[in-house]
Length: 382
Ligand SMILES: *Cc1c(COP(=O)(O)O)cnc(C)c1O
Image 1: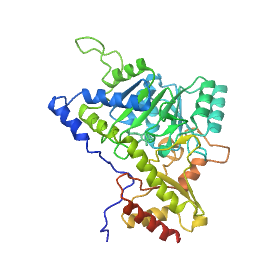
Image 2 (image 1 turned 120 degrees about the vertical axis):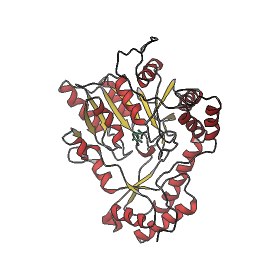
Image 3 (image 1 turned 135 degrees about the vertical axis):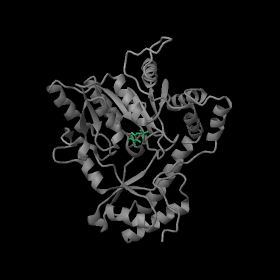
Image 4 (image 1 turned 180 degrees about the horizontal axis):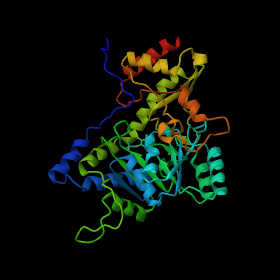
């Protein structure tokens, strides 16, 4: 039945140069722990994003965890986080035993609502428990309204961690996504726009802080010949082999952004005039890497639900997914405080109910994408 090759949501796409860097590490017997590929990838990332420094680690999640540690988030603290995201944005808040507060999205970007954030911060201030940090996510490559969000946080003296795991290569008002908060986080997980098979990075203009991040990420070893420790550390550093993959991937990052955007354009051309279908907007002044093409489908208009579409596509060996299930709807975060965009209007609930992510791999051929479009057109009866 399923004789055609599976079309994935977003699968790893190597440049061909990765093995050159890995071979170099083998030739030098610089397999682990650190080495020239780690240094090189950190340099590549800092240069590309025009920030002072980057520290590469084992995952985007560990980078968020380190950012929370650098901001001294602990047991009695609160951290605000976008509700509409992958669980990895919020899990590190729990690692620190801190209390998460979840903030809704707005429709212009699908990202954190400045209106909801302001309400939440004002209330927190009144109650005398301002958060230690606000984790702002850039969903599917689209930057949040960073100017507004950072201005609100600055008013309250609260630091922003930018979860740019999905938005490497995107820009906001001409500057690279991930460089707006005190700390920015990238992920090189297998499905991201570039991958190291698994990995992440913490970026910042604060070089002292990133020095501390590297210290924490290597078991927090004090400067002594014997093994001495005064602080809790982690084994979070990226290996020199894995970093070699990253170096090969950085060479094609801009090309991948163009390819992702071309994938989006083909879907957009096919469905932009169809009633009941709305693509995730690209805010004026921003450039999204379109990591995943995401849209909403109103079944009252189209006659078919998001759920049915995913099932029918799966029958054709095509992978599609719902938009992330918001954190405030997760059993893990039951009872956690949540601030909707407006009272009685939760935007992320709407996006979760109607949102669909289409196959967006940069290694998907035009013919494969045309097949996806053809199946979708049949389902939508257009
Ligand atoms: C992928 C992802 C992460 C986590 O990255 P890992 O490298 O998988 O740990 C964090 N936040 C968001 C929004 C992500 O999509």
